Image (cartoon, rainbow, N blue to C red; front, side, top):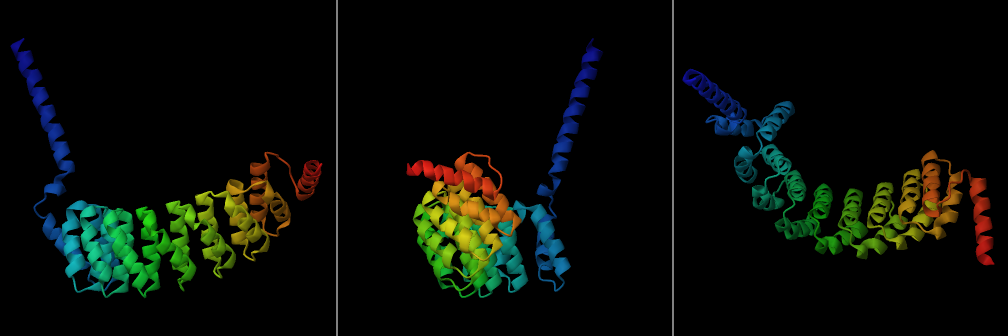
Length: 309
C-alpha cells in the first residue's frame, strides 16, 4: 500500500513538473535575457534602406508586443531616422499600450509629416482622452492634408463630442477631400445630432463623390429623420451612382412616407444597385412587399387618393 501511495505521489509530482514546464516554455521569451538586445537590433533594422527588411523587423516587433513598448517609445522620440520614427509610431498604435500616449503626443510636433500622421492615427487607436486637445490643435494648424485626414479619424475614434465643432469646420472648409471625408465619417461615429444639418448641406454641395458618400453614411449612423428630404433630393439629382445607392439604402433606415415618391422614381434608375436599395427601402418604410415601378406607382396613387378624401 505504501509503495502504491509512493508511486502515485511520484506521478503527481511528475505531472506538476510537466505542466509547469509547458506553461513556462510558452512564455519563455518574456523572460529571455537576450530579448532586450533583440529588440534593439530590430529597431536598428527599421533604419535599413530596403523596405522588406524594415517590414520584417516591424512584424517581429509587433509579435513581441508590450515588452517592446518602452524601447519603441524611446526610438520614436530620439531616433534621427524618419523610417524608425514612422514605424515606431505605427507599431505603438497596433500594440495598444497606453504608456505610449505621452510619447505619441510629443511626436505630433515632429518635422516629418508621416511621423505626425502615424502618431495621430495611433493616438486614435489607443483611445486615451489625454490626446483630444493635442489632436484638435494639430488638425487646426497642420499643413499636411494626410495628417489632417488621419487626425480627423482619430478624433472620431476618441469619442469625445467636444470635438464636433472642430470636425464640422473640417468637413465644411478643408481643401483636401480625404480630410473632409474622414471628418464626415467621424461625425457619424460621434452621434451628435447638432451635426446633421451641416452634413446634409455637405451631401448636396460637396464636389467630391466620396465626401458625399461619407456624408450619407454619417446621416445613416446619426439616424435623424430630419435628414430624409436631403437624402431624397440627392437620390434624384446626384450624378454619382455611388451617392444615389447610398441615399437609397439610408432612406430605408431614416426615411418616411414622404420619401416614397423619390424611391419609386428611383426604381427606374439605370444602375442596378440603386434599384435594389430603393426597392428594399420602400418595403421597409411602407411594410408592403410590392414589386416593380408600375405596381408601386399604382399603389401610391391609390394611397394618396385615399388620404385626399
